[in-house]
Picture 1 (cartoon, rainbow, N blue to C red):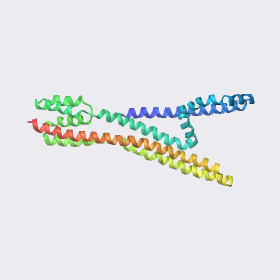
Picture 2 (tube, one colour; picture 1 turned 90 degrees about the vertical axis):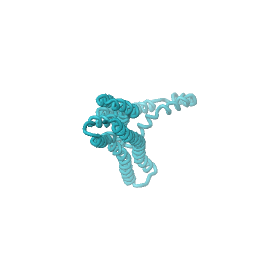
Picture 3 (cartoon, rainbow, N blue to C red; picture 1 turned 180 degrees about the vertical axis):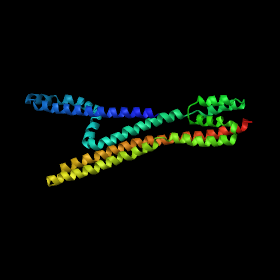
Length: 273
C-alpha cells in the first residue's frame, strides 16, 4: 500500500506540474491574442459587430466548456505562493484517501462463510485444513483466526489471549495513515487563512502607497486574499467527507472482527477436545 500511495502522489505532482505549464501557455496565447486584436482595423470591428448575434450562442458554449480555465485563473489570482500549499494538501490527502479505500475494501471478508468452513474443519478435527482456509482468505478477520488456530495446542485460554492481542495489531493497521489525512484537513484551511491575512496586509500596504482608499485597490486586494481561504475550505471539506467515510468503514470492520472472534471461540469451545 505504501507503493500505491507513492504512485498516487507522484501522479498528482506530475498533474500539478502539467497544469502550471498549461497556465503559462494560456498566458502566452492571451498576450498574442491581445496584440492581434490591437492591430485590427475598423472594418473588421464593424464586421464583428454585424455578426454579434450569430456569435452569441457559440460564446455561451465556450463559457460552459472552460470551467477548468476559470479555476486556473482563480488559482493565479489567489497567488501561486499560497495556493500551491493548499493544492499539495489536496494531492497528498487524496492519495492517502485512495490508498486507505483500496486497503479497507481488500480487508473486507465474508465472515459467515469463513466461519462455516472453519466449523466444518474443526468438527472433523482437521485443524490444518482450517488454518489453510484462513491463509487463503484475505483480511484481518482471517489473520486473527489463523493466530488462534496456530495456538490451539496451548489451550483455549492462550487462544483467546492471542486473538485479543493480534486483534489490536489489526485495528492499528486499519487506522494507519488516518492521522495524516486529518493533518491535511487541518492544514488546508490554515494555509488559506494565512494567505488571506498576508493578502490583506498587502492590500493595506497598497493603500498606504497610493495615499488614499481607492475602492478598486481595496476590492482587488480583498479578492486575492479571500480566494486562498475559499480553496482551503473546499479542500478541507472534500477530505473531511472521505475521512468520515473511512472511519465508518473501519468501524464496520472492527465490528466484524469482534463478532467473528466471539463466534470463532464458540466453535472451538464446542468442538475442541
